[in-house]
Image (cartoon, rainbow, N blue to C red):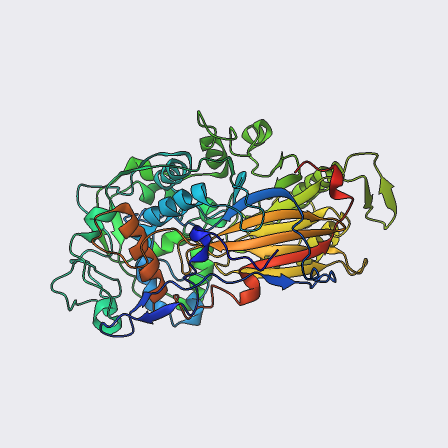
Length: 552
C-alpha cells in the first residue's frame, strides 16, 4: 500500500539534496527534479507495519495542509527590514529574518500551490482532497491589504501585491540606502548588493514590476478552513500593535536604520512591547496607503464571511463573530476538526492557550467520545457517537511556551503549556492528529499516552510556503481494520523546475522556489525539509474505536 509512488504532481520531489550546480558565480544553485520518496512506515506508537500483500484499507478522508504563506506588503512602512543586518547577533535571533529576497514572488508561489492542489489525488486512496486546512501566518504584518490578497488567492479573485505609489518603494529598489538586500534589477549584471556580489544571485531587470502586477487567482476548488497565527495578530509576528505602529502603517515615513544610541540588549523586549522605538531612527518618505490599516483578531474573522466562500466563514462561526474569538469546531462525516487560537495578543511569537479556551476544547472533545477519562482519572461514558478528532493550530505543542499572556492576565485561569495540553488531550483517545506550522520545518512526532501503552496521537508540522522547500502536505485517513493509517505526502507546486522567461505566473512561482533554496542563511542548509520520516510517511496507530461505522 505505501510502496506506491505518488502521481505526477507529488512525484517530483524538490527537497533537500535535489539540487545541482547552477554554474554561476558564488554558491547559487538551481533545482533538479528527482523521483518522489516512497512512504516510510512510522510505527512509533507500537502498531507494526502491514504484512506483505496486505490490501489497501478503506478510505475515510483526504485533505491538504497549507501553512505559513507570510504574504507580505513588501513596501510596508512598519516592516523593519534593516534589522537583517544584525543576523549574526543572538540578541536578534527571535526577530530576524524580517525580509526575504523571494518575498515579492510569494503570491505567485501560493497561487501555483493552490492550482496544483486542485488537481492532486491521494497516492494511496486515489481520492481528490475534500478539505484544505490552513494553520496561520497567511499574512506577514497584520495588514488589511495583505489579508485581502490572502482571501483572493484562496477564494479566487484579483490579487494586488502592489501598494503605495505608482513605483516600487521598498528595500529591493536600486536607490535604497543599504546593500544587504537582493536588488534583481540593479545596475549591471554584477550588482552592488551582497546577494549578487557574494552569492551569485541572478540579474532580472524589471522583475519587481512584473511581480507586483495584479493578477487573477483561480482559488481552491474545495472547502478550506482558516486559522489565526501570530503574524495575523502582531507587528511582524512579534510586536504589539501600538497606537504609534497603527498610525505609521498608513503613513508616509519608512525607517531605514536604528536610532543613535540604541540599546541592542533590549532589542527583543522593545520589539515586543514598544516597536515604535524602531521608528525613531533615520527614515525616508514613501507613499501613504490607507489599505495598509492594521487587522485585529475580530477583523480577521469577519473578513472570512465573504459571499461564495466554502464553507461560509471558512470554519469561523457566528459565535466567533459575536465574541471576537478565533477557535471553532467543524465536522465532516469521518472527523471533527478543531481549530485552536494559540496566539498571545500581548506580544511575542510563542504560543499560548488560556483556561477559557481549554475548557471549551474539553467540551468539544467530549461531544465526539462515547468514553473518555475525566480529569480525576475516572472513566466517563457519554452515550454519544465516536468520531475521529483532528486538531489544527498555528503553534505546535513544543512552542506553547509563552509566559506573557499569563503575566498580563489574558483570559482566566492558568495558561496551558506543553505538559498541560498533552495531559488534556491524552484523556480523549479519539484525538488522532494535530496539524500545525510556525517553525517552517517539516516534523512528524509521535505523542504516546504514558497512561495507556500503544495509545496516543501524531503531531504533524508542515513547512512554510514562503521558505524552502515551499511545499504543502496531503493527508489521507485510511481504515485498516483495527489500525488507522495516516498517509502524509509532500506536494510541490507543478511549475517549471527552472524559470524560463519570467513572462508567466508559473515562471514567477518557479523563481520564488529557486531563490528560497539559495537564501544564504535560510535555504538548503536550514534543515527545513526535515528528515525522511518527516515527509512522505505512513503513520500507524491503533484505531481508537471500531471505524466501520464511519462514513468513508
